[in-house]
Length: 319
Ligand code: AMP
Ligand code: MG
Image (tube, rainbow, N blue to C red; front, top):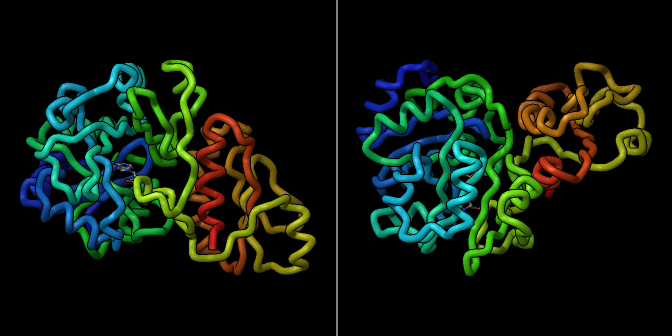
């Protein structure tokens, strides 16, 4: 198992040598390595079992740093960066050649973001290079939102996990690209479409497509907890499946009758979508560890952060 701690210097030493660490962010925990070291980047792909056509997000600590690695920052990108960083927003910007092609899967844009976790920003400031950090889970599985989750899944493969507590946002960043300077959403995430539109006006949504090589994060059957998940009306699904104590449920804000309390995950007793986002992956993970065979889940209201939550639920339920 990996060691879990708050030792920035230790994290730095491992990264300086080309090693990988578990790293907290406000979205999910990342598996981090030196973005400029192609061997470290390759190790990330093999450790996660991630297909190498799936590009990585680069993490750094300031807009000045970002400018060192990209050749152009469109006006609207600058506005979004200034208003929303540090935060769960990733921008796709034209890359300079210093970024290894492995990071971007050969695309001419690089995904960049400034994460909002204090200990991680401190680490990034100490380093002479940016980090790439995809979620610290085997490819296709549920993303980790605590240091312990990382240890459960990748603890045999890495030495150290920097502990930043649990993730305040709980789902991945919103990814925005630019077409002739106009923002286009590539992935729904921790910042809502409404919030982005309040800053830069109308934004288009890149249509979901599991075959779109420009956005492989859109792959179907992602975030899979291992057990089958069926989406729909919880009461109705329970009726159809019939009497069984091998059933677990994910509900938005209220428990349903007839399923034991410990087999139900209520995402947001408060009814707040931000609370639901924060709890989503831990709920999937927790049900996966229970004595059940099947998970039923309901979608949440489809606005604001709800769109990103529903996107994750649908992909977790995809075959
Ligand atoms: P994550 O797995 O959360 O680290 O997110 C990485 C995702 O960002 C990838 O799966 C892609 O969907 C997306 N991504 C990264 N770089 C690019 C890029 N240059 N163009 C389009 N999408 C990208
Ligand atoms: Mg991931």
